[in-house]
Image (cartoon, rainbow over all chains, first blue to last red; front, top):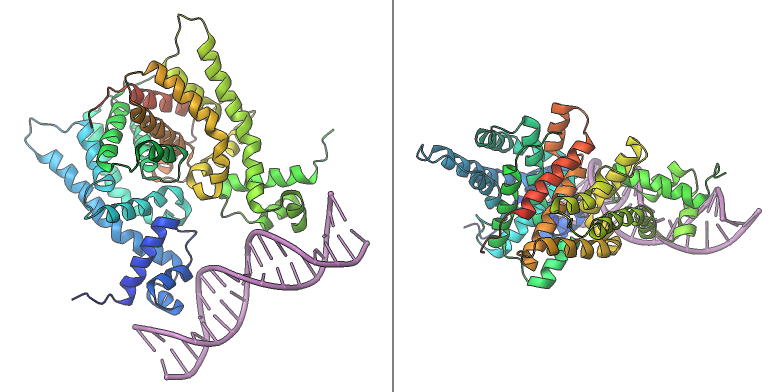
Length: 212
Length: 212
DNA sequence: GTCTATAGCCGGATAGAC
DNA sequence: GTCTATCCGGCTATAGAC
């Protein structure tokens, strides 16, 4: 079963791979249909426009990803009462699903990371899919504010923002520094990267407040 | 004098503003020449191709910016011997020129920040200008390694990378969190943002090493 | 549901007059 | 150095046969 993918799935799969490697703006519908081995009319028949292809491609991946984030957070919140979650654990719950876990293969992970990196590098192309992150954003903010009660709302928002910056750069592949890293250390070890990122971000969240 | 800008300068100014607000990929040569009030042939006569327009626009801004970074670093390195630079000071020397200082007006700063933000969001469009950052990268890495000698080369590289992520997100304007920040606090105070970013990053750099 | 053909637009780049 | 006119290719989208 499922030995033959239907047209819609073929389009989504091809689009996903192309968005992941080339970006959204740089990927034309014509490249997608060539890779999917369907014709140009099919993509309009099934999706209506490029924008809706983008939405469908991202929604298919974001939904289960955020599901995992929320499950991990929930697990931290509901475990034995004497063990309140730590900052590091919450940050890990946020980053692990995207940076390392829940991938069946190296190839799968790199495809997902490539795809998600364009959420940050092509904001105008994906503005309409950011709503899918609303719940995750609010629930993680709430969890963090609970264990960092001395931080003001603005403090928390900025530090959350900085966390997203760290996550975003970790998913990038084209950066000067990223290239340097590959030169020096060969392939990127995502398990290690996850730990490094969590460590760095946790220190930032736990830094004392400043007067501005 | 200089009341009449020459064609080349008019093109550079128009391109800079458009790149800053719309991005590079989204800006066509035709939009540039319309804003600059010159004709389409002029841009090819003076620059040869769009790629070279991009190079010229960025080089004009990056060169003095990195000059400033290096001067600030130099000042830290050469002051009274008993006062070794701190991590926070080095990070500040790296971030301050782009995030807050050296701008004659709010408008000037936002234009520069918009322009530079696309160094991170459109990596393929600016790959050929990243060489301009080579010196800054190496000298700041060296300064940091001197006061953080316990960090391995890989540690330092990753944390430097994370710093760039924080800087990058600080310059973004389209983000979910950035929008949230504007809702909650009105306009962005870059003086404050600079301090927050330096504080967050410094904590990350100074975090103890981990075994991976 | 699937295809071919094509409309209609906009992009970068160039030729050649002035 | 500056301009108009134009080439040529790629793009999204649609019409209409099967």
